[in-house]
Length: 339
Ligand code: NAD
Ligand code: LMR
Image (cartoon, rainbow, N blue to C red; front, side, top):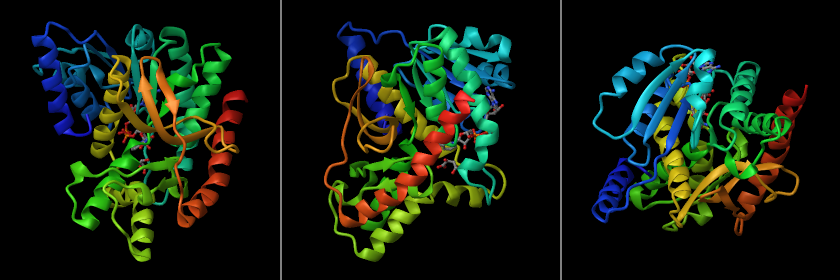
């Protein structure tokens, strides 16, 4: 589901399967933080996804109402709300994909790393519950700072003896979504035809759009390249400032989160052509144990982590700037989880 367009393609595909007598396999998706700014529209989009048969909406509060509301929609996913830690195990049991947008968002003037204090503990505790109740699930981590929360999740899963690097994903899809939009606007292209690789991580200079590999390829002046790169890196801050204290990106994030979760589901269901960018355990950059690059998704999660292709001098310099910050953020997550 690259867009609602992709949703309708899926509906079409699902009905084609129904006509040919092949049903989609049953898939349970759990959303943790489902009553929040991202959680609610993401829950709506996942309820509309024909690859979902069960939708578990978990939050510390508010999910009975969100679930009752969403459950009246005419799609097959049976939707249930779970509120409070005592219902978390039930929400998780049997999940194929678990999406985690739980945690506090930024206010103007904050960096994503400023959220670490609150969100690191939230992610640690949710992952510990997942290790107990749904150890084989594919995990999509949205909670910031992604550059640290994903390594935290990996460490907790290791401690519990259930870590599978192929099943742990940091969601960086919104960076790709933004780069596509900004590039398409700048070059007067239909956005549906545009693709822009975005690699690295999910904070400031660690977000590295590779406009030299955009399709369709368009020459950019140095000014255009610098401003498009900066706008992609600062996309989250642009929304935080526009919302003026009322949180960060929620609707575009729900769209991006639904896109990525759908890709995971299609991979699980055996679609052989699913590739998305994601922050995963990686050896693409030798100094960094996690990195976002293109990943081939399949029945086991990340089947293959792709390299970066040929980088321009400008992109190589961007990568050089990103490495120290990424390294420190990854280590901060690892240290927190092992403290
Ligand atoms: P929000 O405050 O609107 O919603 C967060 C929800 O999490 C709330 O409903 C809250 O009750 C819930 N929550 C808190 N602790 C929880 C716990 N222990 N278990 C389950 N639920 C819990 O925030 P939001 O705007 O939805 O943003 C959520 C997170 O997503 C933030 O950390 C934000 O920075 C991040 N985010 C990431 C990206 C990305 O690209 N990866 C994009 C946008 C936002
Ligand atoms: C985003 O990129 O929109 C998110 O990471 C939220 C934020 O704090 O910018």
